[in-house]
Amino acid sequence: MQTLDKTDVAILKLLQENAHYTTKELSEKLFLSSTPVHERIKRLEKKGYIRKYVALLNPIPLQKSLTVFCHVSLRQHEREIGNKFVKDVVALKEVTECYNVSGDYDFMLKVMVKDMPEYQHFIMNKLGSIPNIGNTHSIFVMGEIKHTTSLPI
Image (cartoon, rainbow, N blue to C red; front, side, top):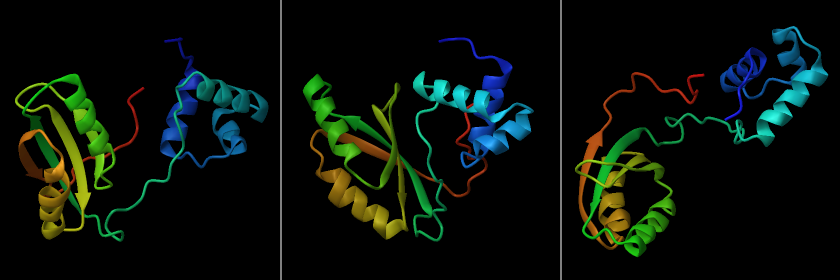
């Protein structure tokens, strides 16, 4: 990893706060001219510090207000079986995040659905149709205390 200077860090923090900032707005906040700010952003993108720009959506009006963390263990742990599971899970639109974890389970999925009946349908008809799942354990989110997409830098 290349060392970032304080201006690079400031740009990254500002873009995490609002990726919609224009180069001009960033320049004003950083007390720099637009050209060096633009060049730095392009360099940060090229070096992989900035992966992409997205809009963060509100799950409530989109009827995706039930968040569930679903732990999954596989019956067998051969490479082909694990790769098939990953491919199948990535295709499920309800799964917004998937992590390979250590401990009692092999994977942790973040699932976002409308309500409990939709989650039950997801478990029974979608996740349940993936072969080689040993067992699952669901944790239902009652309230969100902190949610950030910003990385600590």
